[in-house]
Length: 148
Image (cartoon, rainbow, N blue to C red; front, side, top):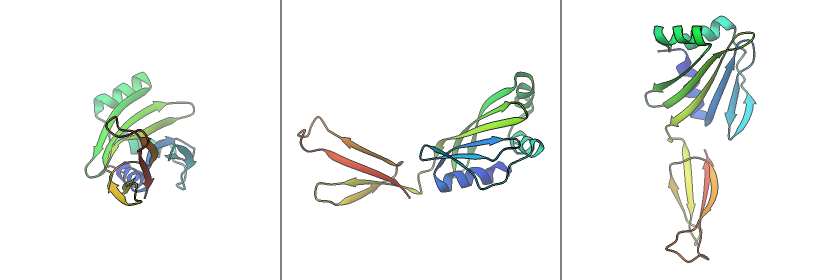
């Protein structure tokens, strides 16, 4: 099992959409659209290289070394799909990992009816109002989606 799987499982469990890794700097997490420092210590250039290179094929490693950047995807069973951008920067290696499709097991979507009742739907946090062309304009359906 690649070492990065532990990071990806933590992302899924905590509703993190993006993880930014950079050699010598603390990791950054995007949670609900806001970037925050991770509580994990900063990774050295060698640690980050080991973490990322074990996901890559020889062809991908050669492309990264030649071009200085690589875009790829990674799927972790029962967790989701992730888009990964690895790049060389000064003074070292960096990576941005985006949760492209994360299982919604820990998320909840509540549909509020006119009578105040709520029904759960799997989805992502959001507040929106939707007007159906088949309903009266004065009869909106209000959705409130909360992260759990």
